Length: 183
Image (cartoon, rainbow, N blue to C red):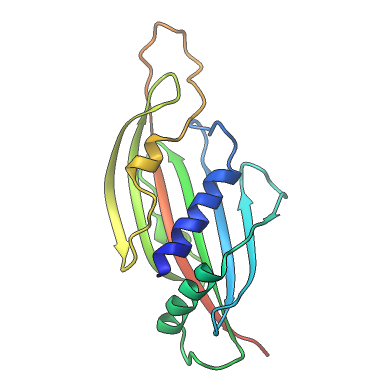
């Protein structure tokens, strides 16, 4: 059931993205859903380094809220209390060049639920020419895979049309949670 909210959030991230992504500089996008312990979605927020200071509300269907509730009840300490809420974040990060260390960037109190790192080869026209999963982590495999990465459109290289310039980068997909006690 948790996969339903993961797919919804990642689809929301992709839908909010600019039509052409930057392949020369690092960027990130995230959807954060706040859910009470009884499965009711309280809020949904989209953020992106591609559009600084532009946080956008998003919506979550009831079924997705229930899915997040099942994840939060298995992950949250002391679950079942009416004064608990869980934030589930679905994030994708692009890093040109070197393989990033994704888990070191989680904030204190965040719990990694699942992650995937994919090496991408982006041709001069901005299409993903090759994709390979190079790392996975956590017990929840994100829905975003090489198929979704191959559908992305990146900016074309700033080289002449006859050059076979290819850029390399890494797409990191993370699903992580944070449970808090409301005072």
